[in-house]
Image 1 (cartoon, rainbow, N blue to C red):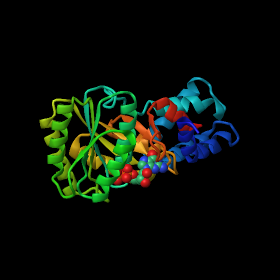
Image 2 (image 1 turned 60 degrees about the vertical axis):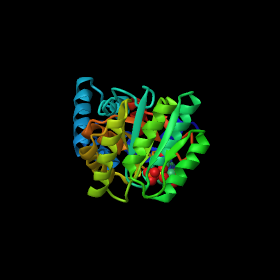
Image 3 (image 1 turned 180 degrees about the vertical axis):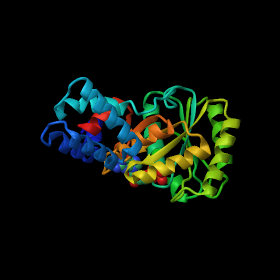
Image 4 (image 1 turned 135 degrees about the vertical axis):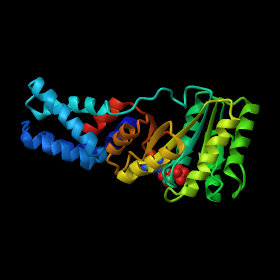
Length: 296
Ligand code: GDP
């Protein structure tokens, strides 16, 4: 199954809900607009986005005399796509670049670093992985496995080492090796906490100060956490001034609307989407393609 199909299958829940209202009677009436708004809210898009999308589409339908629900599908996809913030720069292809990955445990940071390292190495980019998650011994081992799998060197230290010092080492090494892309995994916790944010603030500060290359901070978020994901994104963004977001696990039971909401509310671009656990299961993000997969 291709990556596109994987995303489409993953977003099947959102699509099934929308399909129901698109096919019910097929006639556009007040009940249709109410159902559409509710369905978008239920699909994790949030009330603000759901209302403005529905209102705009309703105006368009009146203006263009669209009376059958089926005629609105593409217009809906386009309207949803316009909610996404666009990226000014892609930190994985505009090189040189240092990227710090942040997010709570289990979001998919380490896996995403591994996938990106693999893509970069295959493209011939001189890549280095940094392991600044010194909180869990397993995290260091997991990162080493990804490094071996993708043929990219991992610079880290033992458990308990100061994460900001690890970043310092990583940048030093990157300069020595003339690396073009540096991907640094950081520690998460089960939830956001003041202690985690303080640690990450220091990590970002030291990395920015030490690095001659542009440094981006990218949040990795698990789409299956729904509205909770939005709250996490806000907390990380408030503390660290994020540059973008990677949404993972869109192959599963996630509703997908959370990507729209996070990107719109925090004005942050979605840089990639994760659609599986394998090394190739990372997709570039295209707002319209994503929205079409959401709408059906
Ligand atoms: P971290 O704690 O943020 O570093 O998260 P990990 O990278 O260890 O990932 C946590 C779990 O989520 C692992 O079992 C991964 O295989 C899984 N995972 C990561 N990304 C995806 C994805 O896009 N889809 C699916 N289905 N699983 C994923």
